[in-house]
Length: 368
Image (cartoon, rainbow, N blue to C red; front, side):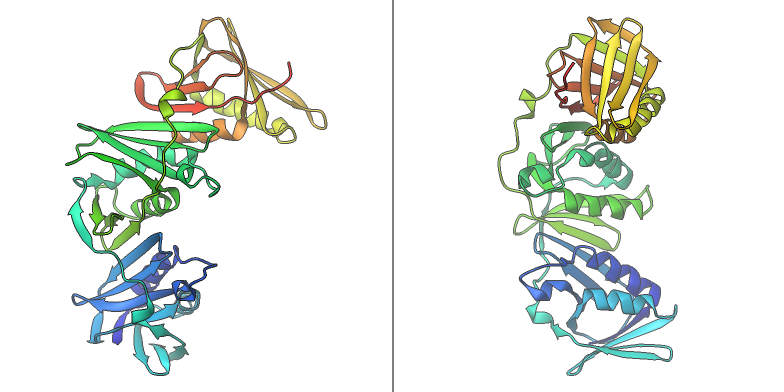
């Protein structure tokens, strides 16, 4: 293989593909990226077996072929090169990298040792705008678990019914559900790894918000997200997703409508005192509004009164301040509705006049 392309384009491709490369693996070849030629273009592919990223580049192909190159070394090396044309030539002694007066040789592995990227079978959905996709995940991805103790909770569940698609994520302590209008050609119910979705969101944020993202299924059942010259493949997470209908409260005894910005500032202030007390923030609802408070014996205490519209009997409930702030960061409305039924039942949050996004947080049991 002998190819030539701009340093900027090469660095962008290998950086994107190497983001998914595992730092620890029982298969050392996975710590490399596959650089090869296909259909008259240059392709860079990195994979963890569960998730893969393919980047297509334009350049000059003098000789077809492919080679596996250690990802970390390649990215670090290309990042130091001047913004000129880079020539990559694979031979028996490794890969020679040339750019201007610079030349280096990197040990490589045969392309045949690298797992091949999946092939596409049939479309799953019509194209979705990157803005819609990014907005959908902004509302739910933060609620997915970040550890692998229960793999099913580390993903986002996607379900479609008719012209509506629903995304749900939960880590067992909170739950986010977002509905959007999206017509899919067939029934869909799958759990997609949060790590892959984070990469897909990163990809959409780096592209024109007016661009479209293509969704497809591969022949082995993987999911493909494609925008421009970048494709992300990921396996579904198998298992039974928690029955969220049992988690979502059916009624409430107290409802508060409050200003979002006022709540954010109050919780941020309370979080300063809550840091030394397991991040516990109390919300006390009375006839005049809501009181946000926190205390820690070694720090002190604070209390913020927020005038709000209150319906129902009132009461007190405690939450993890981080969960509250992450929810507030995911919304952009002016007025937040908070509903509760006692101090030990989940609290529900949504925006005034918008039932497309629902967030549930489990309370923290505290002494009176």
